[in-house]
Figure: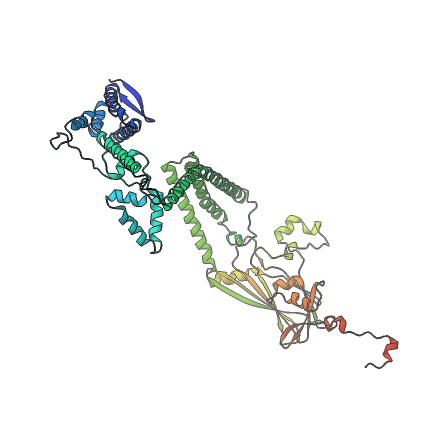
Length: 554
């Protein structure tokens, strides 16, 4: 059993055995002593410690252990090299007879070069990675730039993806220099030599304006990126909060709707199109499948947002698999019901019924929308219509606006071939086959009433209770004799085949305040009866007094 202590190498905590720690401590003491006389000893030793910490992390991850042992420290020292190795080489004046051979090259890593850049250092980084002249890389990007902007787009992508070489270790890895004591020392000496060379030639190497502008732009975007990195996190969190609020709102609405529709059978929009289509024995199953199909993606978005932005909430693989299977099953059932309902609209059928109307004495017919509310037998019994509404007429307010389903009533007015008015009712519907479509049309009814010269049209086609919509329609063709006068109420305007007839006739007669329009049946069809007295301009009418009428008009 060995004693273990905890050490901190540049902010990274490691567990290390006491014997291994003593070896590492002596090694770092020798390194710091050797570089103590260097111009920037702190930077070199910090880079060396960073490299050692990186190597320790790789060893622990590779061997899947938590404690650094003596063998690990010796392995790192062997790879980094000791101070005695290159001190011995220096004493022998670095001759070929040196027993220590040093290879200063290893696998290169791709970084953006901050020391040799025009924009982001991408080209210089690629040149270092492939050990070629940077000019050729820049020339390649310049040649591809005019081809659909390929070079420019690729440069921007690499600028975003490729990391920048910030530390000395990054710059050494970019150039393929081995990251050991010898490599760190050589890199630092080369850097000092380069600085001295630049200082000696400072007077002759004054940067042109384009390079100054380049550095300014680079620094500007660098600081802008730092600013946006902080602001961007806040903005992302705000967007995440907004997404969560929206998803929670939709989820609560789905739960409340499911409980109301299925649990209490209340608030169902069965009277609204297209919900009338699913108002059948499968309605509950359809609502449940639709709820699951919509709710699970909302729940997934909520969990992903919590995990990705706020690092909270998690869902296991098994739970996620169960949710996925449930969602796929509900989606499959929803598609099944959709196909089943759609199959009920494959065929269409129709039939026509003719009603002979009573002619009027003055050959005038008034067309109005029926205001009477019609109740089914069950509703009449439930409301006790006979006792509570005796001698009363219950009006229907729904006919004052468009119904919730597609318009099922169309009225057209034509000239009759005989001297009596006739009403043709043409019923049509759809179904899975012709027989079903015919019975769907037959199971509908339309309420029409004639009171002397008044013809009352119902606003909708009546179907049997609790039946689905199958595109039932009725076309009413009113045929009146030649020269018959037809007065149409403006509430019927939307039901006429030629919609807007009443509106245009009222506009022609300059009578916008009236509620109906008068038409006359001619050989060319129904025509608006124009009131000539109203359409004549007032300025063209001359009024004479009895005295003036004896005068001669010149």
